[in-house]
Amino acid sequence: MTYIVALTGGIGSGKTTISNSFKKIGINIIDTDIIGKKIIEKNIKIFNSIKKKFGNSILNSNQSINRKLLRKYVFHDKQTKLWLENILIPEIYKESKKQIKSVNSIWCLWVVPLLIEKKLDKIADRVLLVDAPVKTQIKRIMIRDKISLYQAKKIIYQQTNRNKRILISDDIILNGNKNIKTLDQYVYYLNYFYTYLFNKYKLKNYKTPIFKKNYLTKLY
Image 1 (cartoon, helix red, strand yellow):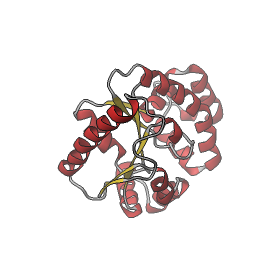
Image 2 (cartoon, rainbow, N blue to C red):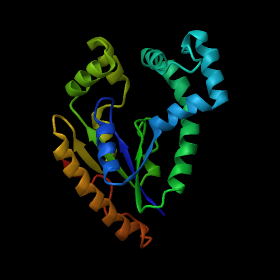
Image 3 (spheres, rainbow, N blue to C red):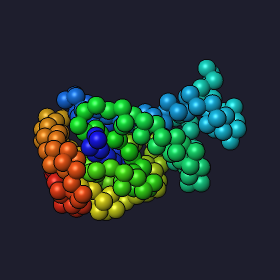
């Protein structure tokens, strides 16, 4: 009966910053990136598939998958990216459902970077978008991942564009150059808002949502 809020956004938009803010106030976080990393580490079938495709060069010295190198392969080749997503997404979705089912709180945050690409938005009760200007995204990932401007732009333009994300979103946090105190205030407000939606919609078993799609809460 948990109310599911899906958090999404492009690379470098600040999804982790926002999810960490929710975590600080006690919200249950189900993060598909973390789930994906664990699956690569522990799922023998997927581990062997990755090793077979890329050879021993994809392994670290301790025989684990070199995720940094894997990410490099994925972002440089669209077909490789699709191949990896096709073997990982079903397992990630299965584990997400399992974790959401075990949540005891009235609502939880489901962090899904590929929410739109994989058409998973219908599963959530509400979609929260962390948005940032493309120039800001590029700057952030160049610093974070130590990559060139060309590489950063290539990664950005492989993803769903901002307009498509905004179109399917119910709530938007613009995370341009906001300080953490301001972002924490947004998160504090949204926690109360989602609790209200649970009490009005999920708890009383309304057949239609109180706030329809695109009745946006914009936190700019």
